[in-house]
Image 1: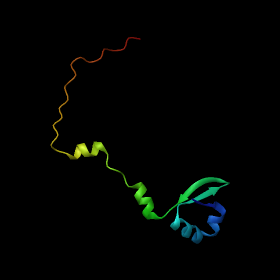
Image 2: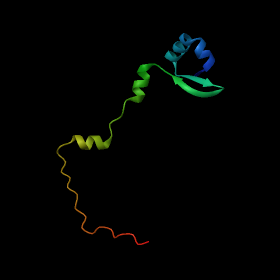
Image 3: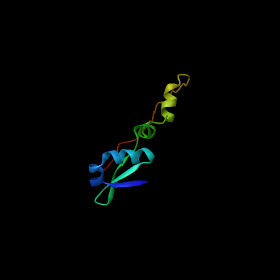
Image 4: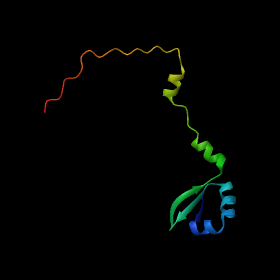
Length: 79
């Protein structure tokens, strides 16, 4: 992964964009990684939510779910 200091990034954003098109670019602040620059398409691929099991179950109208009612409720706490 390519690395660029925040100062170099501020001085040459065009170079940073060219580097980020090849691979994600880590921008450092005082020697420590602080940001990552990558093409928007790659960001969208990472950001796109994956379907979850709960959403799949909610979308299926054929499931009959009727939980039993609790008759014996827990007793109150005695401190």
